[in-house]
Amino acid sequence: MADAQQFCTFFLNRLFFGVTVEKVQEIIRYHEMTHVPLAPSEVGGLINLRGQIVTAIDLRQRLAMPKRPNTQAPLNVVVQVGEDTISLLVDAVGDVLDVDPKYFELPPETLTGQIRTLIQGTYKLDDQLLLVLDVDKVADITAN
Image (cartoon, rainbow, N blue to C red):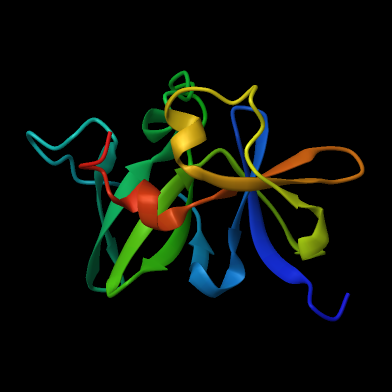
């Protein structure tokens, strides 16, 4: 697969997501967050990442999924969106996958609501469906 695309993968409410590795800065364990009064519900808070203040977006909230159990701490997938750095709060991190672009498909009709608007498309893998997240749209929390 000479022209394969690479995706950093993660899980959210048993769904399998990916973002292009070019967007990913790092993956870190849960950091204490500072609550932001009057912020949209998708904003989980602010984290201090080695002196840089980063907005953490709760992907479960952003994708209109059930809340994460209180016993489960999220992981941070830190991504670059333009000039900004944001953290995506996810349930678990997967592997970096190489995927052949010829298997790319538009989002299936079974995906409805908010999640459909934030997915670029899908890849049918051997044992699961990879949902490719549009990080730029996810970061635009004013677009609901």
